[in-house]
Length: 432
Ligand code: CMC
Image 1 (cartoon, rainbow, N blue to C red):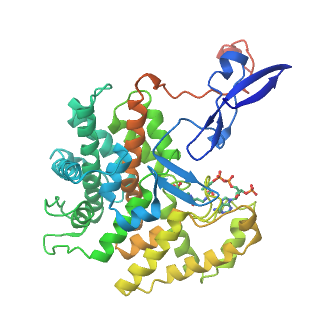
Image 2: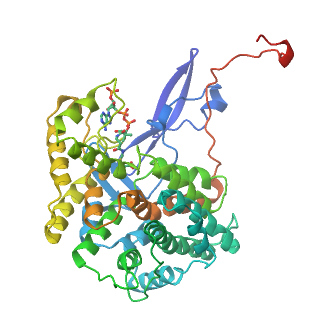
């Protein structure tokens, strides 16, 4: 029998259907509430609102579980690659050997950007934030591919659009970095894999060819897998929202990049390092900064702590921490920032404020330390997150668009609390 929820408004009972997910998570379906009752629901920040049903990613925030298409995140990090995870997220299944080769070839093939676009980079001031450049460049890609902008694309065109983005966003990110350090742009090499190619485009110069270091390549691959999707987070919801108007995928991803930039979302990885550097410069007094974070009169928050969904240790942070130790040891780096981070975590895990609110290190807490060790500059950290999150954004856009009849423009309601109807007063009759 269909489970229902009962709601009574003004003495009138209503029965609302309950939707049950694969892992028995429950949602009250209110899609006919307004039509039936005239009421809407109010849920600031959407903390209790499901915006869609999705078969891409499962999170159990209390248990610290994260799965893509049913596969555990730790298993994927250990045994898979970012490219394979891209395929898995977008197409729903692990690829056959043949399909995987075609997919990788297609991504490699689309790595060239129109030469005219190179001049865009030089128009930005050298200090421009690479997230601003990336977002603008991704939107600009649409200008060069009018054939990929039709709102009702067939499967083949969708595949092309997705491959263009998977390949080109990585190139644009590396070019943004090269622009910021005043070096010549470097192109992909066909013999390199996705991650090695990215490192090559970032760090090869006319006088030094970048050589792939396997420990670093694997760590970066894992970081990308860990960032690849996280269901209906702020940027993914933005991509879905923009895509729901049938705006093209380039525009939707560009909007997602802007949403990710904020320090409460992906921008936290940059904010964490800046905070750790601030603590180091202040003599390494972690307790002082913990106290600041707990002081309700102080806007300071412990960056890299807390999560809307995880009320247990973020499984991604656990994996990153392990790679952090490994990479720093491999490179022989003794980064005092890592010690401060560990000290801060130790304090937080035993502090009643953090325990009561279930605030644990999140994905952004240790990732910056890894990027730093890889010589990726701090203002590129959120760009790295965007690169990793790209397949998730694409997968959600595809899932939504493919729902054919079910696609609805995203358009929340509100409760108006402004002035009631007023008579207009001409300017010369208004009080001074
Ligand atoms: N430091 C100090 N107090 C905190 C923190 C923090 N980092 N995070 C939450 N709190 C407190 C908050 O003040 C509130 O206390 P009270 O109940 O006394 O008012 C309580 O914990 C609940 O916080 P909230 O803001 O209602 O929680 P939220 O689910 O709306 O926000 C969050 C989640 C991630 C925005 C927030 O924890 C935060 O601002 N963290 C720091 C920024 C950060 O690391 N962001 C990256 C998130 S993970 C990657 C991603 O999603 O991109």
